[in-house]
Image (tube, rainbow, N blue to C red):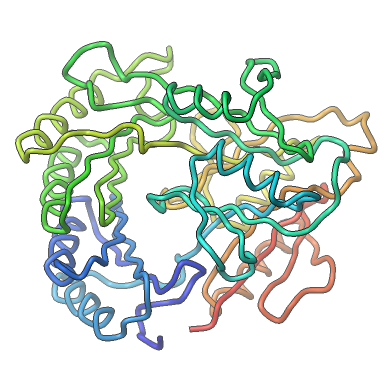
Length: 404
């Protein structure tokens, strides 16, 4: 597309504009909503540090107009931060495995993407990571990479009924596909029992979704949410799509050390609910989900250090968790669990589940270098647009890039 601020990823052209606050970013969101009103193109992620814009088609004229709007507001673009993290599963029976994951995730087919084949699955709201499939071996020892999915209780019940079989594992939530790939499918809960937060659900993070019907209406809600969140001093993620707005407090950030809701967050959630209803909006929690990836490791510190560097993530500051997070909270959380080192077969086998990092072409070598410097090694024969790097225990990261 060759517009200075923009880069092409697997989901299409994207840009990131730095902003000092949610309120500052919301002003750009409003300008962009005016540009696309009636066009049907709106895929905006508002964060305390800026705004990510994604287009569903290459449109240099519209991209330049958005860049001009950002510069008029004093907001600079930083293409180097753009990336997508997604999942690839080697499947012996692709139709069966794909059907399982579509049911568990509540995803929809998305067609071809870069390196994803023709049977990828995507979040209808384009928030959670895409999953694609490629031909591979059937059952082997348990993978060291697994997935957590949190959905509303009704959605979890429906998925379990469609799949059949009883959940297993220490928490009674584990399911496995035809090839033995595992997912913990967890039912969420209400934020509180009171009507003041009736629109909110806790799916590891506290979140809500409001259908809006138009970009202008979505931008109005985003502006109201930004002002309330900045006033409360609590960071939120606000994702605007053609069919509505998701407001997300982030994994575990709604709760206190004892596991209860932070009073300040409950108050903010209630204020947001009132603001949405003042705009005539009604929540639809059935659209919500949370997805994260887990990695089992013998040396958790070494493996965690690799993935932190390779993905450009940061450590969760809490001392009792191993999570690493995208500093802009645009990509999924990874967490790490200690694995029994006395199982040599499980330690040696090549995972069927792989993580892919999609980056702009001009950032690819920096990501490969960072992964190698953090203890990784380049493995296998790769195409000109990808490199596979293994972490210190052999878990693979595919780094894929796209030309503008």
